[in-house]
Amino acid sequence: MALIVQKFGGTSVGSVERIRNVARRVAKWRRAGHDVVVVPSAMAGETNRLLALAAELQAQPDSRELDVVAATGEQVTAGLVAMALIEAGASARSYTGWQVKVLTDSAHGKARIVSIDDARIRRDLAEGRVVVVAGFQGVDGEGNVTTLGRGGSDTSAVALAAALKADECQIYTDVDGVYTTDPRIVPEARRLHTVTFEEMLEMASAGSKVLQIRSVEFAGKYKVPTRVLSSLTDPMLPVEEEARAGTLITFEEDPHMAMEKAIVSGVAAQRDEAKITVHSVPDKPGIAYAILGPIADANINVDVIVQNVSHDGMTDLSFTVSRGDLPKAMKILKDQVKPHIKCKEVTGDDRMAKVSIVGMGMRSHAGIAAQMFRTLAEEGINIQMISTSEIKISVVVDEKYAELAVRVLHKAFQLEQE
Ligand code: ADP
Ligand code: ASP
Ligand code: MG
Image (cartoon, rainbow, N blue to C red; front, side, top):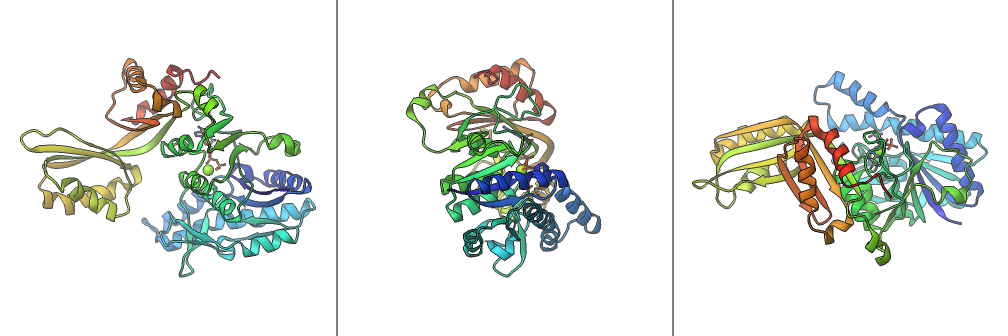
């Protein structure tokens, strides 16, 4: 008998019928003798609807109140899933994040989980109940409702699995696993049977939203066996079969597998990027800090950073932020930073995308970057910035080329082939 955390995404709980199917599936695992904790997302589209309502009342919604509103989506599905389970003959109980409690910091809209109290969940499990915990939400030290950022139910599930030392965390979604790239963009994309934790981390940070990056960080830190699989299959699929379905995130690299490991395992794109360039700044110590320090203080994440060679003691510094942060970043640079560092001008471009290739095999192979750049050049795609890690190469390009870049790179590295 195992302890399993099962997370169901927005599409998976998108209608009453789908919620019934979730209950059938969970009840099946329960009947097979396993303890199950279920983490539902809000119904598909619901979080967007709630955020839009708030935006109608306040152009910049109050972050504390926005979380009060946004967290309701998951409270609804938690209760509905518990009802469906009771209807399906299982004993079940639902809890909000603050009832459990999932303690977070106070960064509204992108709160980090600090700790999870497992006492209540364990008591219910011991009494034979399925426990349903609303995803995406928590509570800070002062008792304020918090949410974990878009896609945050993944993180709720993996963090719960870590806290409960679960045998597996199963992420049920609308695709049957992690693919070589987003199958909605490239229909030839191929499902990966396994993906290493490092690759999954890079793919998540490169924009493949199948798992929220923080959930992958939790999986890595606490070694939570995590599997991505489909909720759209027959809910009565035998448990033994479902236990092997989808994509498993692995931690230890089997040396034999490593030998055969694909050089490139996946391609990902992150749209909604923006590029900022600070022109003609003095090339001297402290300048990068003077520019990026105030940006960090404003809680804006900076991604790719490029500094050019200097001419006559002056240089340009470019970096990317997410598009939503561009107006705020430009204001800080123009009002606070420019007068102080005396640069020539600050420009922003909000139509950028980051396209990345990821693979463990890159560590031991030369020429991958050259092949990537040649492929993009042949399509006339101009590369504006480049950044690399041991197992990833990212380029920043005009957003209109993002899909084309993904498709040609997927083909060039023959990812459709086993
Ligand atoms: P959920 O609501 O279940 O959390 P998401 O929409 O957040 O689902 O994530 C699943 C989606 O992620 C898929 O429908 C797919 O379009 C997208 N996706 C992006 N990259 C990948 C990838 N490499 N493999 C699988 N799905 C991907
Ligand atoms: N409902 C939240 C969102 O749409 C969290 C999630 O789905 O994981 O971002
Ligand atoms: Mg998601």
